Amino acid sequence: MKTLTIILTLFLSLPVLAQVPEQAEDISPLLIGETIPDAMLLDSKGNQVSVNSLIKNKPTVLVFYRGGWCPYCNAQLSALGESEQEILDLGFQIIAVSPDHVESLQPTIEGERLSYGVFADPQAEFIQDVGIGFKTPEKAKGYIFKKTQKEASDILPVPTVMIVDTKGKILYEYINPDYSTRLSSELLLANLIALKKTL
Image (cartoon, rainbow, N blue to C red; front, top):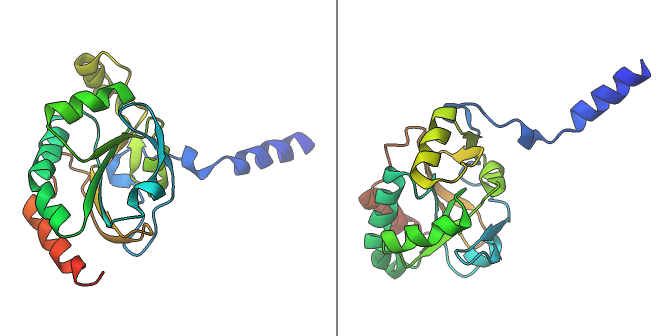
């Protein structure tokens, strides 16, 4: 009986984050009005930087993408780059986060000619804390390795765009389990214009 109690205690003490959804449709993201947690990310040179330090000076368009191996993600990152000046003019900045390897960030930045911040969350801890992570399908792992010659992250984010204020409060979010469908620049800009009036 004592052994059973110990086993039950250990089981109940396991972190909730160990319960990563199997499917993209089963995620439980933070909602509008909630605050994203602080976390440590890595820049393209491997330096640690906190989420709070990145967002404290400007409201932020926070983009979670799957990785530089994903053509849909690269198209989205490129489109954001084309709209960056309009976004900056509205008083916002762009930050992109993926569970990619640090050494994969610079090729993405250069390939898509990005001037905004692109960061790695290699253990997908921030992605899990935001509630948008799910287990990388085995088929996807094979595809990622074929494209990059690197092991895939065990967790992928559902592609997500959040607009957060300087305290990390979520003002808007777009989350779609269908990775081929992304938020258009036009709709993003329309939301930024509307939110600017409230900030």
